[in-house]
Length: 471
Ligand SMILES: [Zn+2]
Image 1: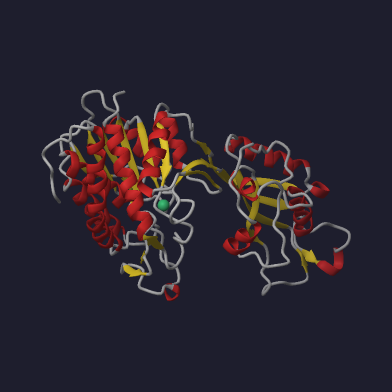
Image 2: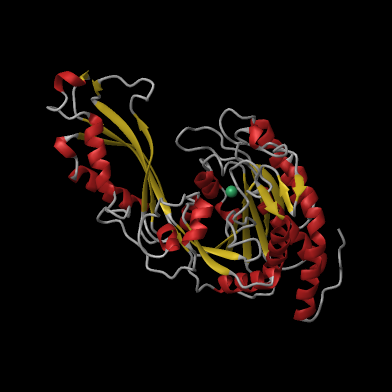
């Protein structure tokens, strides 16, 4: 890695130097990405924790190699509910100097399990380049996020030397895919080390492979198990059927009240957010979601407003005798898992309360309802007026050569609420290296090589501009 000792004097040449160094940093970043992909760092129960430790050690080695941090450590936190030790994260800190801001760079080094390996066209833990993409588990989500941070810092160092003024903290988590159980505890254990003016969460996506995006809203989620009981015990369906309700009869009628004729959510108290959305055609929806001709979309309003700004309710599981075990019986009780997405602007706890009240008010035939295993995460809205947002958009436009789009995401990153709670004054920028074809979490996950190059250059330019910003 070349180190230029002389500091550029003019702002323009300084930025040019960072941009050039960032392009130069791409091949080594991809080689290091390949080495990370070879480590099967799945943090799920039943997988080898040793691999997650190996992957944490590899990330620590990359950060040590930068030579700019006051401290680089592999650390864990305890999961408060269970008392168990969480998965190893890598924490690096470097204090800001001369009144410059501190940036916290987040990514995660754990990956999803590979699923059915026969569906992979090349081995999941063997990085393989085909058609301008590198394939492998974690090649995009989120080891490329790790390497975008490392590559951008290498570029900054190559252009400005190691004694720049920007404060830089890195938090490379080891259990994001497995639910971030010790995340909140890790934040509070290390609050002083992690504190920053700007936080970059590199774990989202772009509009497409050539158009960058800043994720400015994420829906929240609330998920629970609903129990429905109508009878004290099972009976022959010929004996009492027609005179007493079985649990499925009550459940079908109850669940049908959750949606209206258009398939839009019909629960009073669930809020929507009014916001403009980019054009997105029904044809694109059909192709991306796998919706056949003749089956209509659900909901109302622009398609992206339904996904980004309105609530949705999905039944994701049901315990009832299976088709194979079906007998002529009135089933006395059953359980349903209901998973709802919550519009940005509404607290997840309030959304759950609205759904619970609706279900209790509509329980048919006085069916007895129970609610358990409630799990909620809050939505997230970026304050797009922040000065760091403007810097990030300028850096993205320059790095990609195309203006950035503000996007919403229908899914949830619940730990962002933890970040907001712990660091209320920080500006949070949600970026990423993925494009719509990255297939994160699925077989044949891949990273678009041009997107990665642009993302790395953009991040280096953002670091440069923050290093030049007096608070
Ligand atoms: Zn991820």
